[in-house]
Image (cartoon, rainbow, N blue to C red; front, side):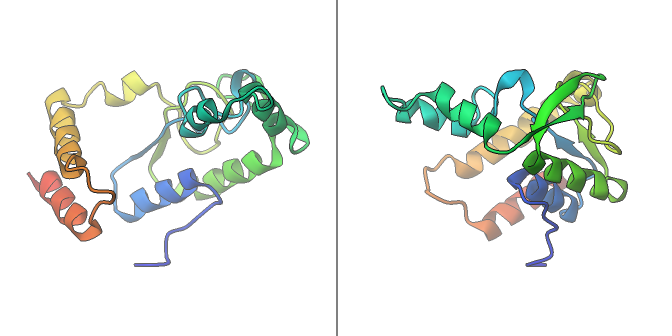
Length: 171
């Protein structure tokens, strides 16, 4: 129902809630380090990081943007997935606490390799999580989704997408 997606302040928390609301058997969290892993605010290849490539100039450097992100709020420490200590901040701790508060009600799995431990959500390697999956069914679903959006439209028709996804799941 509209307006009932639980949210925790980030796109990731909204996406996890929406996937659970859509009755996903499991929801896999990827990239939820919730810390400044290896000293970076965003992972390499993240859309924000890529946008910074286009904005770079002599007076605006990507590294300076990262530095500002690292020190915009007071730094805190957090225990990592493998027992390490990571630097984070209060904003990311809000997301971490939200995931932890929701964990008991959902079948979420954290596939993130490094970063803050999210208590109550098991951590697995990406390979282990999908080792029992049928690669052909994964490719089939990926191809079907890509075909839905490849016509170049600037948006996806939500009702058409819903019905097509339902057909994919049922086939």
